[in-house]
Image 1 (cartoon, rainbow, N blue to C red):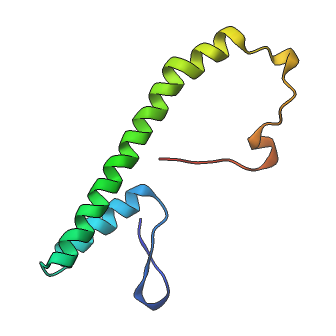
Image 2 (image 1 turned 180 degrees about the vertical axis):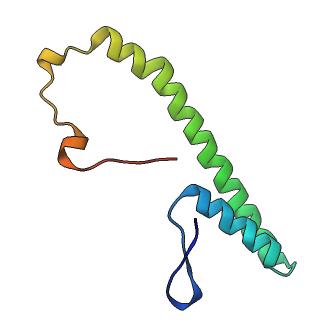
Amino acid sequence: MLKAGNKGMLKITSIDSLIECVELYKTTSKSSEESDKISLFFEKYLKEVAHLAQVKKFFHDTIYHSLYEFFYDPVHDDSEDDAELGQSLHLC
């Protein structure tokens, strides 16, 4: 969801709100070369983000899962969990 910020600016808090903002921009902007370039830039950017999400899923499903299943030994794990530190990363 888009949130109104200072000076009429929108606060974009997620990819979905970015998509919503770009669509809003396309429908409200006057057709010009600059607005077409901006729209094209964000369309390419959002396609790249979608592609990276697919790459991440592929990596997790094929490589990470196999490594975890066959090579992970919890007895020898001395790493700290990000969730324990209160540092979690949320993508898409």
